[in-house]
Amino acid sequence: MVVSAIHSKTIGQTLTQRNTLFRSIAINFLTRGLPLAVGFFAVPYIIKTLGVERFGLLTLIWAVIGYSTLLDMGLGRALTQHVATKIGENDFDNLPGVIITTIGLSTLGGCVGTLILWFATPWLVKTLNVSPPLVNETITAFHIMAISVPFLIGNIITSGVFEAFQRFGFINLLNWPIVFANFVAPFLILPFYPTLPGLVIAVLLSRIFVFIILLFNLPSVTKKFYSNVKFLPKAVIPLFHYGKWPCLNSVINGFMMQADRLFAASILGAGVVAFLTTPSFAITRFGTFVASATKVVFPAFGTEFIQNIKRCRRLYLKSITAMAVGLLFPYLVVFIFSELLLTLWLGNDFAKQAYIVTSGLAIAGYFNGINQTTHSFIDAVGRSKLSTMINIFILVPYLLSLYFSIQWLGILGASIGLCIKELLEMVCKLYAVERIFNQAQKKLPVTA
Image 1 (cartoon, one colour):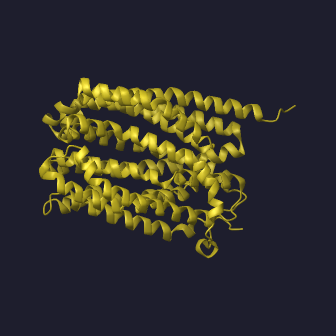
Image 2: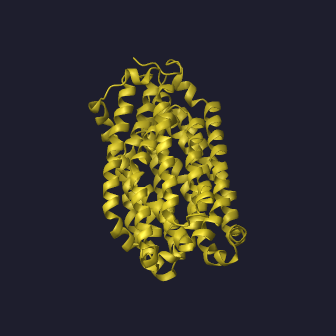
Image 3: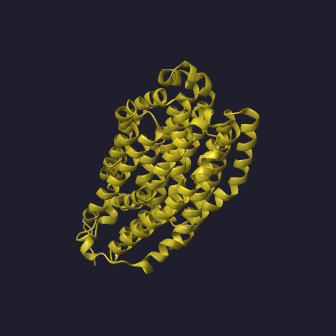
């Protein structure tokens, strides 16, 4: 048996204690907040140097590469849930073998993604209505970013192991090379090479560096990690069974999250997409504070659901209440003062084009924060099929509302469609969580 770095008799209780969770959330909050500040200062400079259309294309490149993470076949979420469950059961047999096998298979899937994206790039650039002078530059940038897909997937998979052990300080520290590549490197590159490929190369190098660091630090999770590791394809089969639903969910949800900008680009042209993607970038980065909490409670939900269903319900109620109350004020400020905030950030001309869209995105962002919490719980307790079925249910209404809203209202329609999607998802998932708890309570033994 491989013994964890934390004593096996107390690891489950240790990792779900209130102090441990609060510390992990605080570390996430602080370390994610600093990169957010760097990004806010960097984006105006990048837009000014690259131009509005190039920056819009850069955000589209980020979106497409982010969507390519579905090629992990759902194993990322599955591995985190598996490790969290094993922590709750105090069972660490074969854990190194399962971890390294999952990382290897997922990275292989990323290589397939590189080939697909590489050969699909010309068609994709044509679909996005890129201006003729920028076509070759955009194709080159997509090709370079395609090479980063295996490393991006490897980072996600490997990070999930550290998340299950509440090692969020280490994980967030590794965000800094990527932050440097996205927001600091442009100050060094753009004065000499104001095009997309130079920025994309910096991101590629940061992904490779982070992946290497993660692999070297796996022994800090379990003692003698690489001396005990074995390639265990059969042990990963249950992860595939669990992961098929997160994988399908990633395909559907990932498409829904990127559909607004893809529809806007194909209907209105790539030149106007920046007025959607730039405020969306800010709202999404603001939502990283939400992820600070949900990434912590996801493995905690999985562990507590095994150990004590009543404690798990209290943890869920506290999490959802804190999310609903904590997000209300900041998103309300963005909704009301969107024009002022955009003017201070990007100037009056940009603000006039984007402030109404930003207000709509603030509403969608609030609903999304609640949805991330319910989604984390549903996946953590092994009901990922339910999350997928909910997304399938709302997919068609969302796409229809998005398409017609953009046709009728232009770029504003994208935020309206997104609000409809997040509201439907919130109602469905809140109801689903209550059903899960009610079913679990009925299975508890009756005490005298």
